Amino acid sequence: MTIQLYDTTLRDGTQREGLSLSVADKLRIAHALDEFGIPFIEGGWPGSNPKDAEFFRRARQETWRQTTICAFGSTRHAQTRVEEDANIRALLEAETAICTIVGKSWTLHVTHVLETTLDENLRMIAESVAYLRAQGRRVFYDAEHFFDGYRADPDYALATIRAAADAGAEVVILCDTNGGSLPGWITRVVGEVAPRLACRVGIHTHNDGELAVANSLAAIEAGATHVQGTINGYGERCGNANLIPIIANLQLKMGRRVVTDEQLARLTELSRFVAAVANLNPDEHAAYVGRSAFAHKGGIHVAAVAKVEESYQHIDPRLVGNQRRVVVSELAGRGNVRMRAAELGLKLNGNERAVLQKIKEMENRGFMYEAAEGSFELLVRRADPDYAPPFEMLDAMVVVEQRQGRPMLAEATVKLRVNGEIMHTAAEGNGPVNALDQAMRKALLPHYPQLADVHLTDYKVRIIDEQSATAATTRVLIEAARGEERWSTVGCSTNIIEASWQALVDSLELPLLRDRDRQARFVARDAGPAVPAT
Image (cartoon, rainbow, N blue to C red; front, side, top):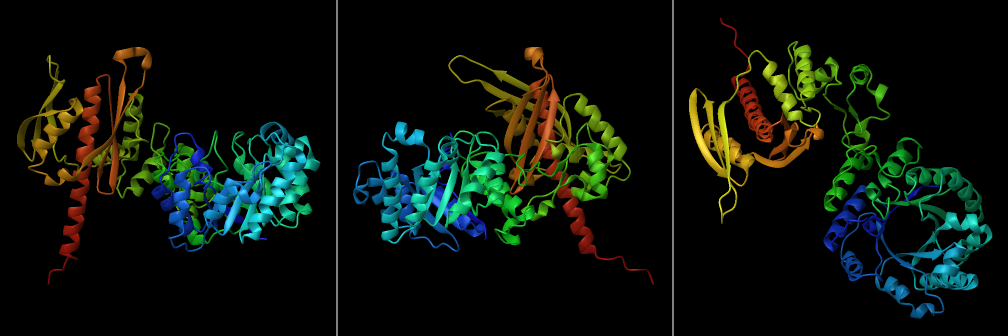
């Protein structure tokens, strides 16, 4: 039987602390999931808040390629007629083809949380499923706290899901709601329960023991054929099962085809898109899709990968839309330098050893090139015998002044040599780094107007030896951009202004050198092949 993927990012995922999605955000994510190939998307709980109700109203007007939007709710309340229950009415008003309802499996929750009887809970489950089915809805039933409930009273836990299945639930999903189960327990319970139900059995796990993905896969191996989770594992407390590695593991490791190869190759893109819409930084070390997932730093690792790529990679990163990266640092060998330079399209001309020695020397002083690949590129370029700097910094001075009744003023004066001409300029800024940037641009723009398109996008400061207090060595990382092109540069000094200046100079020199290379290639191409003399 095929494995069904069910995404609950828009409902369970938004229970993550610090994550909030607008209706427009939810629609954007839903369309991305639809295009990727997720067959079921849980849009929210229409009975809980106006935003989710609005999402379902707008979702009805959208065109969906391959997904079915599901509304989430609970069984009827105790001692309430099902047709009069507000949650059930809200589910019907959402007008989705599928309603996913949650009910209690654990006797502790029935008697102490719902404060009702065990028999009434069984009636709540059966009547809710049957009523929704009678209204023409397909029903998925979430058996909340099932694994804890099965441990406490297996007969009653089993009775709850039988009540749902007998009433017409299409899928019964066993939930590890507290997220504390181990794979062995998941395997045992699913293996015992799945054969006793005529309907499809699903799994829904949380990550409180850092086992949500492992538990989901264990359940599938034991007989579950429906798996729920969220993109990037977003969710309450420690999160939900992360659908990203679940999809990759199912398809690449377990031979369970859940999407096409083309869709799988967009897995990294999907992960990063959802993170961007959620306004959360992507996890750089996430399995399969993180920027560091296929990054190689150790010298002996890189030497092996250069010979046999799979020697230190469990899959080809292109299968999930990611790429191999070679990181250059004080732990690198010459292979790191060669491979990273080749990725940048640079020729070392036998300078690997010199560049590597420079990296080790600079990192010993506090520089860090794995986070500043722009500065590494400059090290390689500057090692070339034909290197000619587009400008030279001669002098710089920064004055910061505070006068009563006015904000603090920063002014920078710089002296540069550009194409043989001495440029001496000054500028004010909203801080010393901004003042330096403005003064340098004033000197450089008449010669290099393309720098007007280069913008500083990030500025990070790290204290390296905090025990030295205000005399500590400071590392500055600057990220700059021009359109879609981005690069990071580093500076390091006990003087934060000097460290900033070093990184700033690199951030402005690198695009000029790249422009020079592009122009040289253009001229060479335009000139065509040499014509032999007759």
